[in-house]
Image (cartoon, rainbow, N blue to C red; front, top):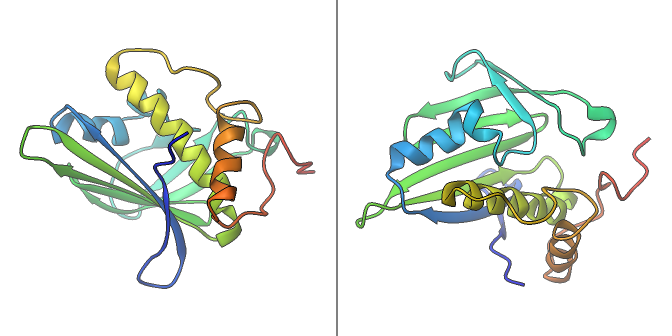
Length: 180
């Protein structure tokens, strides 16, 4: 199993996980993958609703089958530089999506999840790995293989591998730990 995530510390000292993918699409198309709710539903773990993408705009995240009690979460758009960068809060975490055009017409997507709690690194890295695998499949026009998230493979295998790789862990895991 190949892990594509890294654990790092961002400039302000907070822990983060970062994953990168390259798509054989122009940056404008990959921008749709990360900013259009209709495209996000193919890979993002929650439904995403924002009246507009501008700094300060509110975001609502809902219908995540693996969140406790299908809870809703809120966020705020922090920065938008279409089609290069989008960042927003998601609860107490921050998500940064950066798109870099490559010389051959492809686009590199870098997803950085800045963590409120370092002990969520293994859990979140595994989750984003599964999500980006679903995006990879959608980009190819295919359905993702296996469960999108939860206590079943491939997520659990990825989580265990990230823990073995030394990513901080210990935070409760939906579908594995009693979150009540």
